[in-house]
Image (cartoon, rainbow, N blue to C red; front, side, top):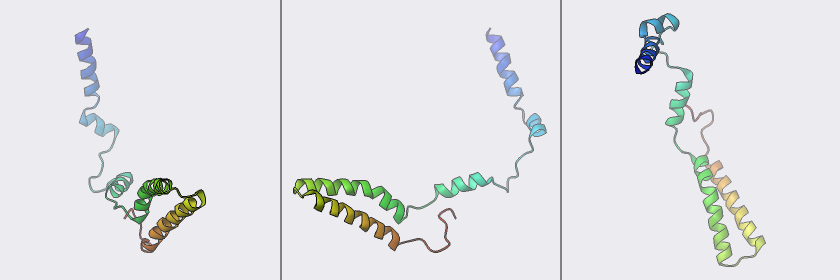
Length: 107
C-alpha cells in the first residue's frame, strides 16, 4: 500500500519534469512580464491619496459627531446639519487636492 502511494507520487512528479513541460508549453520570455503582473505591482506600490484618506476617516468622524451631539444633547436637526457639514467638508477636502489632469494612479 505504501509502495503504491510512493509510485503514484513519483509518477506525478515525473509528469512535471522540465523537459516534458517545455514540449507542452513554451518557456516565458524573461524580459516580457505579464500585464496582470504589472497591474498587481502598480497597485502594490500605490500611495494613499486624499480620496482614500477621506474614505478611511468618514465613518469614525461620523461616529464622533454623533457621540458629541448626544453628549451635549443637541437636537436632531442640528445633529443632522453637523453631519451634513462633515460630509461637505470631506468632499471639499477630496476635491481641493485632486490628481493632476491625465495622471493615473496605476502609473
